Figure 1: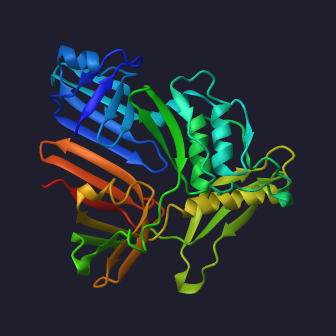
Figure 2: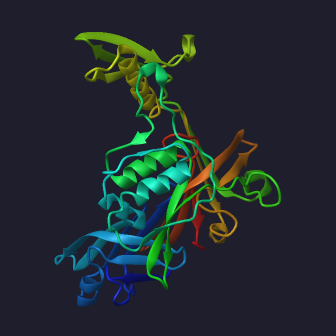
Figure 3: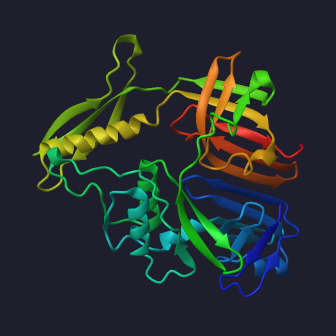
Length: 353
């Protein structure tokens, strides 16, 4: 693993030679993190400063250092940061944008809110056809598809999540600038390029399956308030012994000039979001070849995970990647599926350990 460090103006380049611990992760549509621990010396003090850029040459990923802790007792310095798309959160959404076609309109949203943020270009439009939520005429709410406030990257993340799209900052080491790209993972479950982790075929070892229904809920009740009166509503249709109920403690309050139908709709949406935290979960952990990641499949791709013996069969998206270096050696891991929303948890990759 080779890391290069640059000051914010890219006037020089530092190496990373004595790190005692490194942790780096990436995500399909989330902000990745980095943590570096080095001995406290003059070189580390200069190279690990807030605002400096860490470049992972193997993955082509860059991170911005945002926090540095120098501990003279332990004689170590710890630097923490985020993947470079975090820079977009230096801006808020001051110029609103209606989102229809997610790829095209999200680029427009970003472009109109950069306001001088340097070294960031936008990738050419690929023609991805995913669309955003439509305005609901029944609720008289005409701005559900308009992004008009909040931090820029936070809003971009929500829009891309709706279309199940990913984002990344592509670093050009010669031009010294980034290109922000929206992309869509490849489905690799069929054909000659299919990727499958199958216990019976020996393509996965050290298989661990953990099935958990302890917190599962499928019906949620919530209160909302309209014209000083409280009303109850619910989401979910399960019945009998299969019904597992959740009570939402918050009460949704009607806004000025908001109709009762509109406030009830918002209440149901909040109840649905609450149910998303109480799903059935099955973790699927397996040792695989780390050299295949980035070559045969990458972030956003959909792969198969199968164990006939345990009756487990998943098609899951690769949503995360993590590399760690510590006293036990190097470990690389990937995450399959949304950790809070699907049945797949983590797949462990080992670098010869």
